[in-house]
Amino acid sequence: MNEDKIEIKDKKPALALWKGIVLSNVFAMTVIGLQSTFVHDASEGVLIFSEFIIIPLLMGIISTWCWRNIELKGKQLTGYALVNGLVGMLLSFIFLGEGAICLLIVSPLILGSVITGSFIGQGMFKKKNQTLNVSIISILLTVFVADALSEHDHQNMVSDELIIDARPEEVWPHVVAFEKIEKKEDYWLFKIGMPSPMATTVSGRELGANRKCIFSNGYIFDETIVAYDVNRNLTFDIIDQPKDPEIMGHIDIKRGQFLLKDNGDGTTTLIGNSWYKLHVFPVWYYDMWAESITRNVHFRVMKHIKSLSEAG
Image 1: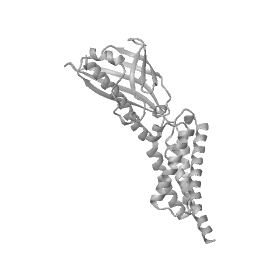
Image 2: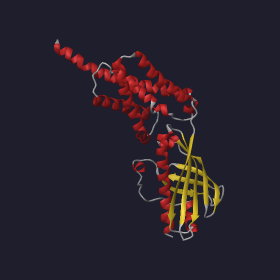
Image 3: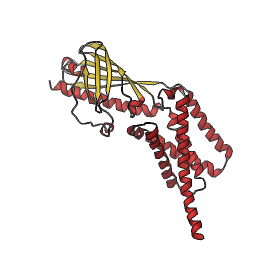
Image 4: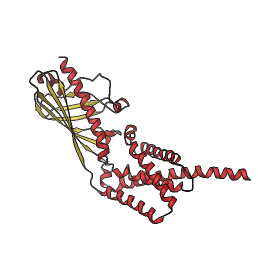
């Protein structure tokens, strides 16, 4: 009889733990689904900061409500919260079509918020202060609704430059179009599978010509040349880009530009500029990643142009 009671007691914590994980993830998927259906920004593919911070915080609180009768120490709570967050990311991969690299990039936000929410929830339900509990949840839900109904628009320009030991007229042909880049990727995101620039083609060396930027996985960015000042300025608008499940599915590259500056000593300063619109928030987090990726795209292309130009 005593052995049966021990078995029942051992099973209850496991059931409560899984209940917390299941309920919190059902809540998250339901809220994201409703937002995608009824909110204008979401229907256009915008992912707001609440999806990466407020919802995971609430996931942590919901899970600890289910775990309130289990004595979990700090390390145990952190471990179960990590499992909860990882389950949520797996569901995003399966049902929301998010890419693996995109989820890797967002993982610090999601996992950190779920863990934080779990500790907040543990404190809330230990005190059993219903007024405080309702207030915290109400504040989080209010922030989520306000964020969901707000306009989200962020555009940025990234600029980089490189000195080439060649005159502008020797650099220019490789700026307009260049052959395949054979050098192995040195940026860690490119190494683990994010598409990197490989080659460009052009229908004509003139204003209005079509230009294509080809990436390592076969993706093609279609471009139109809108400024063609020989040996000085090549500017192109991106008219079509692939919707990749990775970060490129959450950013629109609007325009690219190469400027050539004659240094008067046989060298050229090559300047690469890119303009983009971000579709994922918070800006302070994702713009950091977008700038890093854009700069590494710039330098992969510009270093290749430098190599070709200096080789004569």
